[in-house]
Image 1 (cartoon, rainbow, N blue to C red):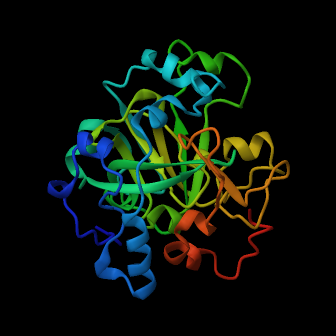
Image 2 (image 1 turned 45 degrees about the vertical axis):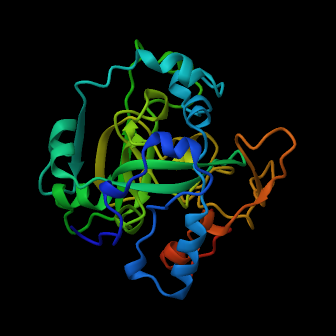
Length: 302
């Protein structure tokens, strides 16, 4: 396993769903204390204060345009998606290309829980307890070849099961991409569950990407293809409006969206009169990921 995040918690430490729903303070599975310095320890303390959003908010307030553009459309329409059997094509610059069944992937990976902040480009946020594995492990299984600099992802495209793709909202299928060092970073995971349950269709079943320091649309759902490439791959929102949605799309309170501020965010479920909270650089993961972008102009590379 390359570059594995040292998590001191195991599945045996995971808090049951019922306890999640009742507790106000929770244990954080996101950070490994073993690799942290003082700053990391402080961040771990902060992580311990993270309270997952309600199950209803996480599963009922979604963006998944393949099922409709309304926030409630995915939960209402995604039951039509068939997730078993499911196969993911892994190809491009890899030693072991092929069609990987979900069973093969599940058997080969090491699963753990990660409690991450989730920040949408629309300036709302949640805290989500994901269950999954590091993307680096899957890429290592496939064997990234020399010259592989980027990873491209593709969402399922099934007009019979996904009513939203019957409309030209985006150029279907939905595609996304990461630079290789972003993909191999230990914070980047493939999620198959939430709250220790199988991930619901509207949240990206059976497997989705989670990149916690980027805006949520980078975390592509219901993945059917992963391709290692030499060149930067196209991404759906960048193709739709490159001025507003860059390739990197890192959470950055200092770089506004052209049509709204990114300096603060509304916590979903916080109530009608709750105050907006300041948005954190890289969504609170600055200590872990800022080095990936050292020397880059973050306004030009938004």
